[in-house]
Length: 245
Image 1 (cartoon, rainbow, N blue to C red):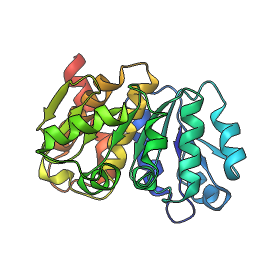
Image 2: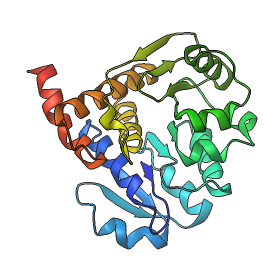
Image 3: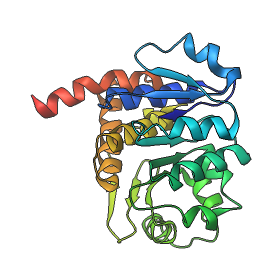
Image 4: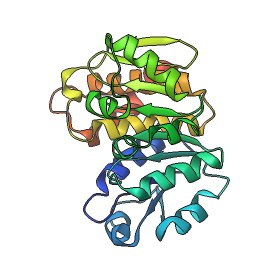
């Protein structure tokens, strides 16, 4: 399940949802507030759509046991609502990916978030979001990402040309196959969707983050010059075909 932002800010959720569907999730649902229902309905076909109203409506949607992996953050805004949605999903034991606005929303409430996170959840910050959620982190990128994973109890995917992926138990991998063309609006939303789609299929969170990150880079290489975020999910079948052919 991918949570949509309000009207005019729903595109990030659609990018993520298509990434999750392309990477193999059997069913993907975008849940949207009433203001964003029409613009999502106009552009979603294979992806399901469900309206929710307020925190109670979100809790009702997430209670569906088929929705075993949930992405929050892309285009969601940084207010109280996204924090409440994250807490609801985590308390139900869902596997959760927090990206973009969901990370910034917890900048002043990180201790409450960390108390709910587990090692089957993934945080996907860029450097700015990382600094807001983990203020005072010191050292190089690897050391900071490792400390963040220990503090939060979740998998941390610290994005960049040398993306660092860390687990609470100290495991760490540096992924360096990301071409400069990935620095395009919406690219991170697709990556978060890849992570969510792999979690939905039962892949362990650390391995899901690694696979999603590598595949994300390979999709950009496969497409080549002129890449925009919409192209990433469409390049994925060719990349996967090389792996299983």
